[in-house]
Length: 373
Image (cartoon, rainbow, N blue to C red; front, side, top):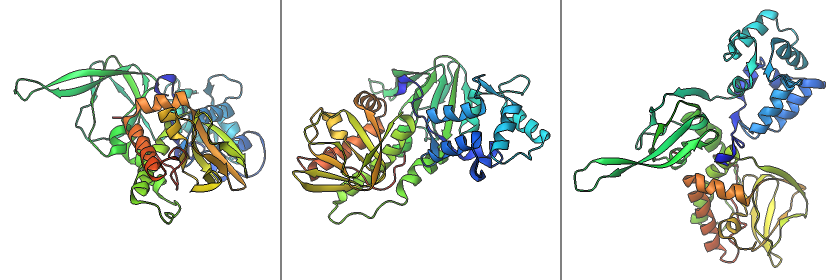
């Protein structure tokens, strides 16, 4: 959640290959650091990485826990990836470019490592500076690294003068994110963001945000099932962006079901929200299959939104099903923090309830998952 830290703020994989000279993509067999990085790479979801996975990758470079990466560390990892022919000059130049926070440019600190692993850019703002204004076009998504920011809503003044006054409606602190509402809803900025003190942020451009989530969410999905209503198809398509964004900013728990096992049964307490990473799921009530869900779909949202018990059984029908899930506290926090995500998920739940009046909760989207302001 926003105030709980960085959560699973994802970062694109692309630039790690340039940092390693492409070794991570072309590593051969063998163990050691190369094997660890290959295992790490195999766990990525699309173009985005979880914060915890970045920490694992950093430990590959810094197994002794020094808190930084040296030229020797870089050379050792590159050698394990089959890049043992890298010259001392190449290693030196790579370190000099990466170690920007180190006065002598000899050590890559954790913050620099995260930035190298991403297509984000780090920006700094002065106290009182406005990052963007209400009504501006949306240019990116932001993670607040340090400092605090006031969220200001511009309102029409009374008396017919036509002027506007600003009212602070929230304050954001380090670890919180913002800017997604305008991006997900394709609308102008909903508020003005003013720095209460010196601020540092990571910014993901609109283009990278859309390439990493929106486009990914719409490609490769299953064909629309026969009998699917237009309203359901529309709600599912819209929700795919929200599901991708949920994965980006949330630390989700992974679990696996074998064929025939259930995620929950009708009457259970609703305590988790699920996204399907891989596999096929059926939604059943009284032995009747109500829906079939595939990778990128979600289920379990209505029970968390309403507090009602589960109203159907969800079962894995493929050899195995890989699921991502979050608890009710994290789900509720996310719904409060992101108006766009809340709207999309609530619309999906309402549409499912209308389609299957007694079984709206477990029905989900199909296709590939993708994505405040």
